[in-house]
Amino acid sequence: MSTLEELQARITRLEDIKQIKNLQAIYGYYQDYGEWQKIVDLFTDNDPSVEEADRGVYKGKESVRRYFIDLLGGGPNKAQRPGWLNIMFQLQGVVTVDSSHGKTAKGRWYGMGMEAKPIISLHKGELRQTWIHGVYENEYVKEDGKWKFKKLYFNLTFRTPFEDGWLKVPVVGQNGPDTIIKPDVAPTAYFPYPSGYHVPFSFKHPITNK
Amino acid sequence: MNLEALEREVTRLEDIQEIEDLQQMYGYYMDTHHRQEVVDLFSDDTESIEIESVGLFLGKEGVKKFYLDNDLLQEGQEVVPKWINVLILMSQDVIDIDPSGKTAKGRWNTWLAEAMLVGGVPRQQWLQGYYENEYVKEDGKWKFKKLHWNVTIFTSFEAGWLRIPLLGLLNRNDADAPAPHFHPYPSGYHLPYHFKQPITGE
Image (cartoon, rainbow over all chains, first blue to last red; front, side, top):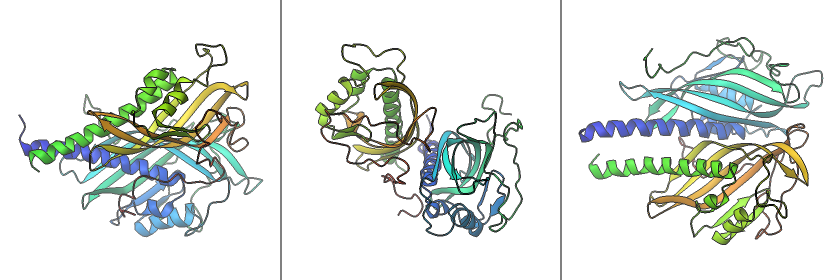
C-alpha cells in the first residue's frame, strides 16, 4: 500500500494533466472567437514563445502580445470583419508532465477546423472558406499552482479551399513572416502537405520507452 | 494533504471522468438512434433542452417529447431508414465540478456529419456548434440537468459555410418555446463560457 505522500503525488499528476488539457481546450475556445488578450494572458511572463505555420517565432511576452493582438487581431480591441470564422478543434491531447519535478509539461494535439478568412489573392479581402489541419507540440509551465503556456507551436499540414481539397490545393493564405509585425526568429519548420514531414513526438513510446 | 482531502480530489477526478463518459455515450446513443437510452441519461428534474436550430423543451416531459417523438421518422415509419446518418463528434471538453460536488457544468465543441431529410429533401451536411451543459449527481450517478447546443454552422457538404451558413430550419412545432438563443454564422455571436479565464480569473 502506498503512503499518503505517494498517493498525493499520483493525484497531483492526474490533476496536472487535467488542468493542462483544460488550458489547451480553453485556448481553443478563445481562438475560435478571436479573444486574443485572453489568450496572451494564458502565457507565462517568463520567456514564452509562439510559432505557427510559416509566420516565424515570436519570443518573449511582448512578442507573444504582438503576435496575437497586433498580427492576428489586427490591433487592440479590433472587431473581426463580418463573416470571419476561425474554428479549430483541439483534439487528441497526449500530455506528459516532467516526472522529476512536476513543474513543466509537453503536449501533442491535433488541430483541425473550418475557417472563413480574407486570403491574399487576385481578389484581395474576399473571404474564402477553408479546411485547416495541423499538429501542435506545446510546452507548459506550472507557476503558483497554475499551468500556463510556455511554448505554443503549431505545424500546418494543410489549409485548403473547401471547394478544392488538400490533394489539389494543400495551402492557401500563408505568405511567410509578416514584414511589419516581424517575428524574432525565422520559421523553424514549415513543411506542409505533401512534404511528408513528421513533427517530432514529445512523448516516448509507451512500451519500448524509445 | 490528509486522507479526507485526498478522497475529495479523487472524487472530483472521478466525477469529471464520469461526466465525460456521460456526454460521449449520449453521442453514441444518438448516432445509433437509441432514444430511450438517451432519455434515461436525463435527471427527472431536468430543467431544459435547448437545441438552437430546433427549439426549447422543458422538464423531463420535454425530454421525452424531444427524443421519443423522433423527428427522423416520417409518418408511418417505425425504424429510422438506414441511409439516415447522425454523427456527432464530442470533443474539447472543459468540465467544472461545483464545490458542493453535486452539480457540474461542461463546454464541448461538436462537429457533425449527417445525412437526413432537410425540407423533405435528402441532404448530406456538416455542422459545428458548442454545448454548454449542466449535470447533476443523483444517488452517486451523474445525469443531464440542462442541455444547450449552440449552432454555428449547418451547411451542405456541397456548398460550405460561407455560401450556406444555415441549410434550413428544423424548428419543431411541438417545442415548448422557440429557442431563446439563435445566432448562427456569420452573426459573430459568442456563446458565454461557464468557466473563468484560468489565469486572470476574469
